[in-house]
Length: 335
Ligand code: AHM
Ligand code: MG
Image 1 (tube, rainbow, N blue to C red):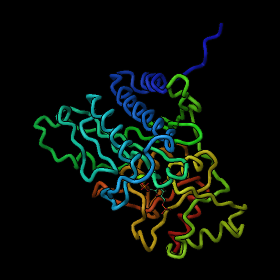
Image 2: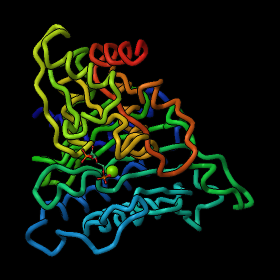
Image 3: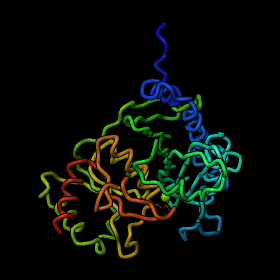
Image 4: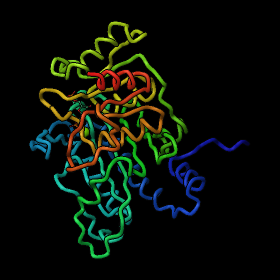
């Protein structure tokens, strides 16, 4: 009998490591299994929303001034618990915590920093719309004295990411991941509780026919963005475009990755620096986009080259297929 072509995410990572880093210790796949374990816990809670008391807010605001949903808190706890016990994560940082989280036991020798948005798009949970977990993994130098400011390890440019990905809790639970050798996707098989490979090499089409933006903000976008969107709508860009906007970055980007086109959150009157966060939203999405053959920019340059200055800093995010991104970049440059 032929063996089943069953490739789990752990097997895939180990094989990739063997191919690209033959002397790797396997520690990295152990770290990743902390993220997949947490995401299974989160997926389980998201699936039960409506059955158990996890919907709604906890009545407090996070560091962004946003209302924390109960599931935001649960998701954050799951990631902190699962990653804090791996033994190789020295520092974590989360959208839900004002400051970096030091893992006391591994502060000196933990080789990795993990930055995450535990449950992005959480305002969509109450209406049963897809949400996601986004993560970015960086290396850190040993800190034998255990005295270095943890922010120094966290504030690294996106080009320093060793891996990044997201889990989308949609009609199925899917993990999309890169360690710098392309993008692979895995679907959680609920029957066996494992992430099984769906696509070992995801690529973003070179052009698409969807643009994704919160159109209610468009009057306050800088002029060139308005002109760009008008061009897509008028057919002047050479094809007819549709618009799709879920308001859940992971879901909006997942569609953009598969179907091509463009997602944009430009500067607005309310968010002059853009709304999305550089370290745990824009950087991991940019790494995935570039690895899949797309482009990610803040309107001035590559997202991954922005020098971070604070943990929760925001930036404009323009990401998508090469064709639409190049047109937008040209229009921004010549404005
Ligand atoms: P969150 O991290 O508080 O959930 O906010 C981020 C979300 C993204 O998922 C999404 O792209 C964006 O906010 C939508 O914002 P808006 O409602 O302003 O269009
Ligand atoms: Mg978020």
